Length: 147
Image 1 (tube, one colour):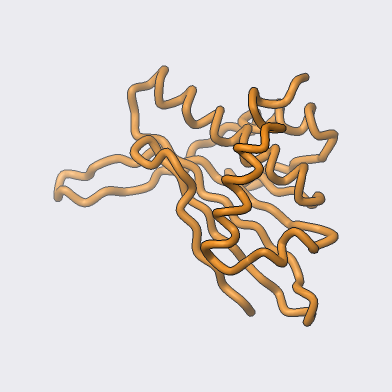
Image 2 (image 1 turned 120 degrees about the vertical axis):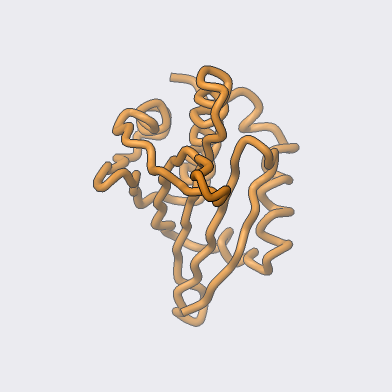
């Protein structure tokens, strides 16, 4: 299976570099291994006007990413989990975007994706980045945590 269109473009690579620069995480490019986790959700509005994330139960959501990268993506409790190098992890993120965009077009819903990337920096500190994207956000929103 082919990679999502444009993933190898310098524009997409630059977008991820900019994203990690904005949250002071350029050391991700030196990480030998990334642990990743993704879940998809549908944002619904309750009767009281508050929104609620309902997790989407779809084990096949990242099958195309697994086929393309050769990375085993495990599915448990509505979460997709993998261990890979950065290039494969970025491909998985791109497939997650394709999946959620397709769901938003076909269901006219407000579906989103939350991702977590973990690695150890050069000082052996665990770094965790949370990424979020939905119908209204065309770019990843990111936050960084260090344990």
